[in-house]
Image (tube, rainbow, N blue to C red; front, side):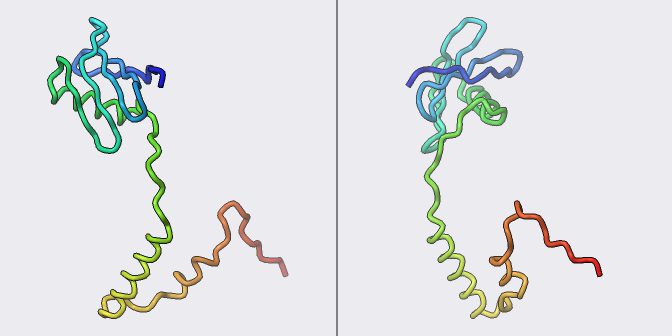
Length: 127
């Protein structure tokens, strides 16, 4: 993968360039001396590799880069909705048998029958 400059962040009066070196991996370059001072990765877990910069400072640079959108979307695996729905149904039935919740209301039962929000609402006819 080609290296791509994602942007710059400024921390404690020093400017750092954020460079994507691989999917989910970034290099941090100090602008004042054009020196690679560390790097961080986003996936599968947040990790740091310092090359001359204090680890605490590198964490702050990475945090700032993430919060100011200087990193790219990694594209994590999409969750299996069937498994999530089955788990929610099991939790609801377990809670109902314990007496913690009442039966589903008519409002929640009709939630599945709602129209998409892109469709206009029905307008009552004038009489």
